[in-house]
Image (cartoon, rainbow, N blue to C red; front, top):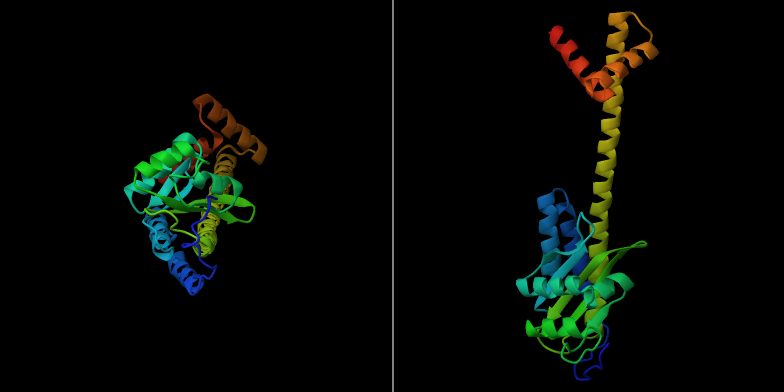
Length: 250
């Protein structure tokens, strides 16, 4: 961290912030139901970060996209998106360091900080002067990072660090819950599809057994040979046979 301005250093006392943060995230937890709702909730997370951390001019949320790239999932304004985009382009910056090292990173004065000089100069040109970045950690995984920016130097101290740490913890739990729910939905869908496939093949075998007077193994071989001749899968042949049989018996 950069040398701190003693006039701006504050004691670590989050006051009612913890209860306010917890209550806000409790209200948001029901939003993670659809893609549109997830985007809305992510935008609300950044808006809440800007509101909860004093002196903040803008906030952003960095996560991995479906391709595994680091992206800004949400931001309160364009200047945050531009500041974050420069970090992704350079592959370095306070947000990425907070994410990778799972630590809170504070920059007191972008004009004086020497850890990421290229990014700091570019961010300062956008009118930013200080920042706080906190990792979104759940269990052994770091999901991303939340960050806040200020337009004045020495905007943040220990109190703000404590607030953004609590905020990031709540955000991580919410995002992890959604990720777990999404994974469960995918697993359930795969299981359902697998069961459906088995049932269709079993139905098709039964149709062949009744039609050709053969046993179960022979019926499956007939389906497999048919699939090979038509350059289809056994499931596709089973689906067609079941559908044609159903049409004939209507």
